[in-house]
Image 1 (tube, rainbow, N blue to C red):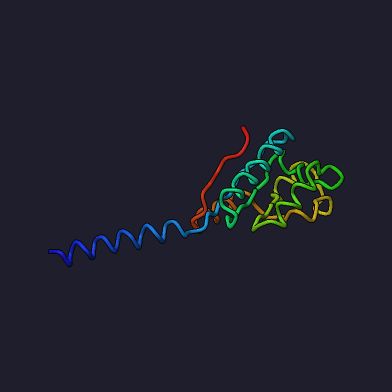
Image 2: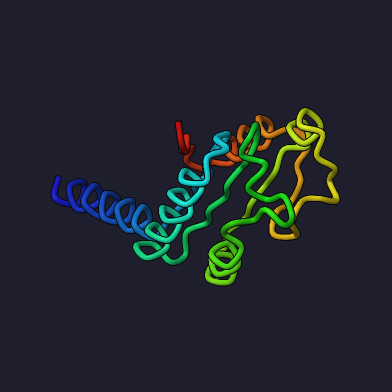
Length: 137
């Protein structure tokens, strides 16, 4: 009986240690065009990275949020560059939304990658075990 209890205790301890060492992977879904919301999301990225420096973060922009990465309108270029230099952070822009708002792909900043469909990008990340956060309104 003692060996059984010891085995259970070791299993619980190993599971606990493994859970603590897992890296956070969080995908944020943003479709809000408000620059105040954009600022909030970037602040949230910074907060997460302060608490978990090895976290992987991705922001998927669709709808009016694609304007966050239109060249010459990138209000937070320095903050975005700083985030990308600190950690594994990526920014994605939906090609469908670009077409919807008549924005040519060449107008999108190099800070972001264009994905065909935002919803499929979000779904793929969730299938890979990423946590989903709805950003903004």
